[in-house]
Length: 381
Image 1 (spheres, rainbow, N blue to C red):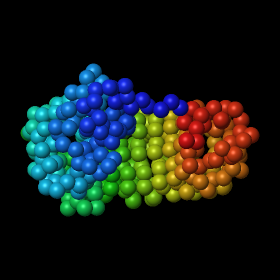
Image 2: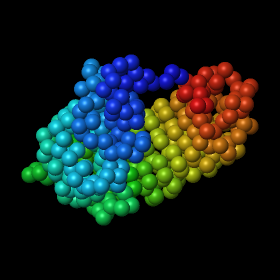
Image 3: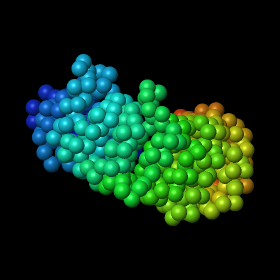
Image 4: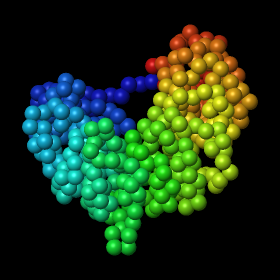
């Protein structure tokens, strides 16, 4: 694995050292981000970012993200400082904006939508911003972000808003007089972490918003099982194109019977994420017998409390996902890994991630195809 060259490597201009750019830059999700609250916990100002953009020259095109997370807590006069960023003309440079936990509320969202500098935004993170029902209405009716493809509306424990079934129904509801504006019309990825909305997921499946989604993230919802199945089958009936479903921290989502309920299968589903759940052998068996197993490209069970014997039902499972993540399952052990390596589904893997699960000595004696899959997934680093 080769390390990512830093964005400022090789720039000799002495002026760039004065703003200490390495502490305010981060490479994540394939792009470079500016951290308004940098690694030294200092709160940066728009003038510093403007200077950085100038000094980067042609490299500035690689700088796509601006992250304000933590700004509300760090700065004195924080509300005014965050407001300054929301109206900053330099926002027009960025395609990704993360305002997580900035608690901008509906007024801050109104300022952002009306600033005239967000037409290029492809991702907007509003987790913990407590925009409320009025903020959701603004997003529905807005034409200010026509390029938006990804939206994070995750709840926070500090929110006053009740992010529940009623709010999801409001988000997806349409009328002839008030259709969705351009901001949500092209949405492909939606995150509703910590919402309590399992009863209204079928409504999402039946909506134009739901049918357009390729990625849906429902992290942290404690009771989703029947709702998720209704969602998947509803999307299949309505012509949905969902490819990836993320269910981190979901502990009651693994009913053997429900996964195999004879409803309409969603043929587009390719990737499932169950990280930070709690899996037993019966759940592993259910996955390999589910209707989606043969069509999966990737499956992630990171930090799912897997123990020796948990993976035994996969011994006679048909070939399934080509990429498998078992990171953070340190209790699995060498013997279980070697037993798993002999399974037919394991032999077909193109990538097998075992970071913080296996030690180098645990890999000794594994077949070359398995070792190749581990290396393709990044090794044990």
